[in-house]
Image (cartoon, rainbow over all chains, first blue to last red):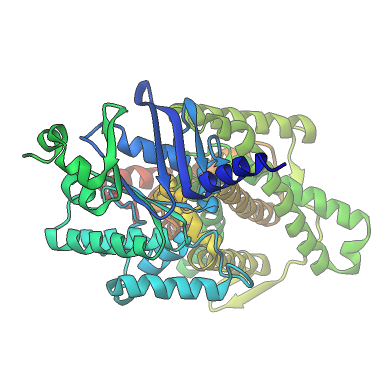
Length: 258
Length: 300
């Protein structure tokens, strides 16, 4: 009996601390294999970033985790459960939410309706995940981004780029995820807005949310993250703590422009 | 004379609008022209005759005409929705990721299949709607309206108002709009896309059933081929209003009904069916996206 206990403890601890685990994931986009067998881990409470140039397969990786793209091989575990092969809407219900590249807010729904869609699985009914839950989560998102409160009756498509990014993040938070996937949240935004978005990401993480961040703005992303992975043409070529990667000569040359 | 023709036009227009909504709802979500939709309408007309026949034979109509008609509508809508649901699952869903031409061909195949299926099971000759409706007319100024016309106009407007509220206010309606705008993003919200597509087909088919039943009551005759011309005209109405636009389909239906009715009385009734298509050609030349349609370029 006794010798088995540490093993059980160990596996429980691993399941608890490693929130997301990808093993040898391969995904094709049409005929092109965009992700060629990658493995990565995201621990509970971490911010992990995935950096790399355009077309390295970063967005494909996120879409595979979310279940939009079906991997050709490999396994994905989220909180110890295998998610590979589940449809996207099931994966959202497990607690993974994504802010995709290009924000993709619903342009012809109002800001409030966009947020309601984010809470689609939470419902507005009674009981747990009911009406009060929705209202308090809405208040929370409005407290993070007060501008969304002001504009809640406006159509999503009329917002500026920065406001759309805030809406996209707020919408993803409405499902009360435990893991947030963020794809290029700084893309095409003014530096002052980028600063605000990155501060929000840090605050969300401080509040206990685990984050997997994909960024081309490698320097800012690595500074923000606990750990990072470097992705090049579909494979992972480097990994380590954020500050370690920041001082790596190869990464400095290839991604930081130094 | 003019007012009379407007009333006639609104009656037919309400029917066109109800069918056009089915085209536009499905197009909005799948970008598919569901050419089998006219056949669903035709099946709705047959189902009306069948169910009313059953209720009359069982004595219900003699007991209460209102209850009998009400149940006929309910049953036709339910069975027609089941047809629409099944057609989507069997003929369109397997082709979801195929090139866009494939589901279109499948739709035409379903249309031909359903026409022949009804012809074989119901016969190739006209079926007569049971003579149970009392004919009462209302005279107002120089206009004579039958109670049936008033019923058709009011019922179609009420159904459209109901649909509008459903789409704008309910959770499922909002999810339908979200799916129409961005399917991938909608699935990342936790929306089950397949369920929303099924709901869309069920609603569209239900509206077509009501339209078919009202036409059967109005003209008193149906046959297996009525879905073809009605389908094409309602499709014209949907394009006229801007395909994919729900208010567009409603307006398009009424505009088309009015044009037909006014054209038939002031120009020549022999070309009645041609006016719809002349208008379609003119609209497509001047404003290719239809009256309320938005250009594809505005999509993000």
